[in-house]
Length: 594
Image (cartoon, rainbow, N blue to C red; front, side, top):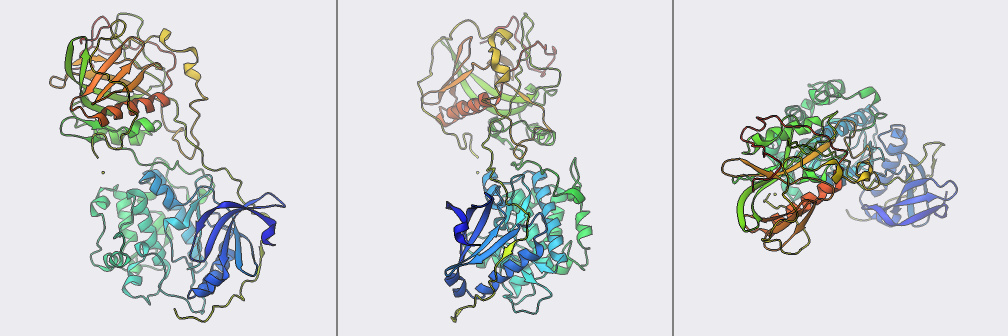
């Protein structure tokens, strides 16, 4: 094997202390690999550098049969570099995914933690300790399963060869190593790192971290009681997750849950923890690596609720339908708002956006609470409209939001015996050792929408959108709304959704009208907090009550996101009950009150 046998990409996959990792294609077969190119001169300069390279090669050979560990295919060298050719994981690093999402959904964190428990049990059964377990060293394959990498710091417990006792990353070092740099890093050290990773997946940052200061980070780990960077975040976690993290982050290694020979039980006890059964589908340990993992998505977006009645949860507009468990969490979070009684409990409506606006029509200007709600499209209730004088709820079906699929580069083959060159002759050279109302809103500027009279006839009452207003192909727009990949969606567990845009008197909560949702609905930003909402029947002229342009742009953006996601099907009438919503008053004859 020679470097000329491969064709490299220009952009590196990653960089390390000794060299760079590239994507490379074996010319003879077309197989794609990750190739770690280590500069021999840099390896020799580092204390224990050659030993680390040998350790990584030996660990990958010993552990290469496990599906959650990256497989080593070839090793070779030339005069300047060493090359380790490994399986390519196309899903990226777990660290990058946590950064992208902010934090992980509980079901996703549970699954990834289970896979880590599974692979750590295997590694420890071989009498090997990883010693540098962290999200940067956990890759994801195309399906979302983990691939553990970077075994240069690993320790073979049965080996008598000398090793560096103090290695790892500050945020994931266990107390026994922080208290004594000559401490004995054994299996419980990896379990401590596992607890840190679980916390980070659920919160977004490690439990012990002082930014810019590894020394202060280690002081927080050394302290007793432990000085969590975000103790309130730990208290806010689900009980089963919190108890598991505390059991893994015990300062005494023999007291850590899962420690082989420890006082709390080994891996069998760890696997029986309630955290791994606290789901609609408990972890199937026997088939874990062959089953499809849950989608890698953030947790349910909790609304920002202001004292003035403002509710902002625009993230709902950018995501696909929520699973039932997430919807229940959000329903509880909005139950305390003034507008909860205006929502349809049968459809489990969630408030996406609710702010105080000035609604202008002809010569009048009235204060109204504008509310955008998203609810379930119930089975057998394809949509609602009205072709009679009886008002009806306007329902729309939800498609799935298009996403950019992750790379689909073919994985490296596991067939054939790996060709491993002897790199044992590399000797060291002699040398000395946030949320505001319009958080994140941005939008294009547009024409002013202040004042003016409505276009066309009256806006119509609830359900004024009829079958005739829907384009023939609106129900089958799969080209612009492709289905999400299994990795990124909840397709199997969610009902499609519908949305409703209405306004009420903010003082009396009396219903005043609604803006019929249809494929033709269009929002347009204006100046000084003004914005327009165009429908086939009329144009609604609205202005943020505080004249805030950012809030107006947030409305335009949110409506735009929903328009991309919601695809209305054919309509049929479904009248509302007379007492629906308590003070929610239905208009008579299909006309808005104002």
